[in-house]
Picture 1 (tube, rainbow, N blue to C red):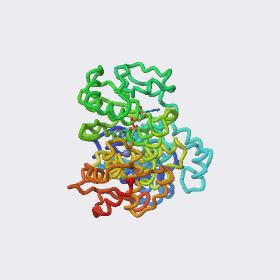
Picture 2: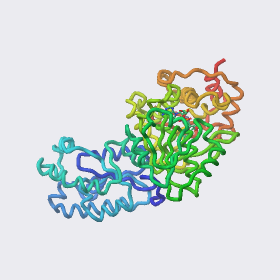
Picture 3: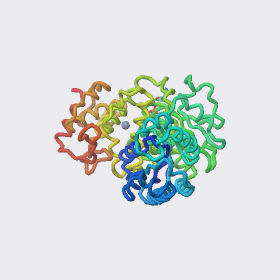
Picture 4: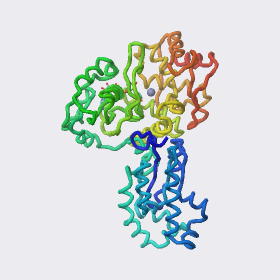
Length: 473
Ligand SMILES: NC(=O)c1ccc[n+]([C@@H]2O[C@H](COP(=O)([O-])OP(=O)(O)OC[C@H]3O[C@@H](n4cnc5c(N)ncnc54)[C@H](O)[C@@H]3O)[C@@H](O)[C@H]2O)c1
Ligand SMILES: [Zn+2]
């Protein structure tokens, strides 16, 4: 339902604006497909109803075209189901449309430079792209209107998806995020980070609270201490900096303190940048198991600065690469081959798309657990000595084998080693997995790269054999 508003485009329409030739139709269609939303291309809709746009311009004039356009945009934005709406380049000339966009949509401007735009449209039949000088003039005139109405800027589909969940991936963005820590707020940081070189010179102007490094952050004691030490009001913001453990704990504190305050998530590990920081799952562990207490509480903003990974130990990077390979298999793209910053952006974008389509994990979001049923079982059987990413690498092997898909990518990129655990303990843990039903695990498998299916049950002996193959004898 439009109206249950989260940050960005969650629960609202996602509108794409920008000059002709920016690629709104192509990018819009892609974003809609990935986020599983209906797609409305207003130009295409006008043509469907009223015939070709060049003919409309010629026979009825631009003013009449704009009137029809305004009606089509209004209709698209009136719908209750959040959609992706790509607007014609001149649609924002209408004051009424601009007002409606502000009220009903999260608006992303798709940026393009004038030369690239002209190269793309000069041979088209678009009525306003017949004369280059006029085209360039129009570009300059409209620029400010786009900026005025847009909540965010983007260059491609990944950018649009991250912007739609207020996730910003950019080198050298950490200092700005800390400097912007609003008065009346607080910083919660992994105790190890202030000792790292990139922290020097960052002097947050708000109180800094530390949490233990690693899983010990996700305990009742730590959360209880933060509740007591925080001295912020309902309008204060918690800026959380660290890996997934810090963010899970600090996010949970933000979800509960004063019945919920805003938080900004600043992930500093690869795991957190491609996964844990995105999507608003927060929580802590109980002695009985991991992540057993928590809340959905989306950060107002996620600031992803790949530069901070410079100090990340190799072992921690490997944990993140397992989630990268998982995401690439789900997306059907070799994301692990991209340069670091693009890889992080693409992984974050994929997770944003899934979260936008299913924020509370009622269905499709389960695909993010590819390989995880087996991973959780191995982690539990090892008494959590086995690191999560290393367990996921093994779990991906099992999921691919059960899917009848090749495992070479996982072998080459992650080099998983069979692990020494008690097979009976691992099997028992698999039956207890909280995503399972009546002791039978429900799996995420791949029909093909990029085509996941979830909630799949397989005969017990097959599942057991897949698990046993991950265990060293
Ligand atoms: N909320 C979610 O959706 C979600 C998703 C995936 C994982 N998680 C959770 O995330 C946690 C794992 O996250 P993680 O792998 O980031 O672990 P982590 O937070 O424990 O960080 C790993 C280690 O790296 C150190 N570190 C952090 N940033 C560093 C940097 N820039 N340079 C050097 N060292 C640095 C930390 O001190 C720690 O020792 C688990 O608790 C898991 O349950 C949550
Ligand atoms: Zn994971």
